[in-house]
Image (cartoon, rainbow, N blue to C red; front, side, top):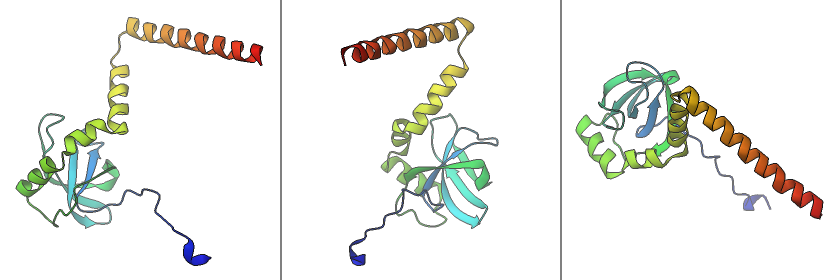
Length: 147
């Protein structure tokens, strides 16, 4: 019976060469890069050919505490690959497209949009929320009354 147990990891995001990271702080905040080499347990060498947020991230060491690991991985990226090789594989794997479709990117875009709303736009959002909640409560009341 013990040999029928199939244990799978829970979708862990490992620090590995080829893992795409989102830079949370520093001069390149908000940009994507990929891990080119692991320097030590706390730092990695990143290189980012992404053009999503403007200029690309130059090859630079960065602390792991300043990045967020994504689920996107560039497979078969050799250790310490050059910027040219990383750019070719980045385009081949369509990393920018995968990032734009990810839930994390969509959530960040929504947060940025909400953060930049004017007073009147915030007021309209509040009114729409109230209206949606009223409709939901009305539908539940109708269901409860018929039950």
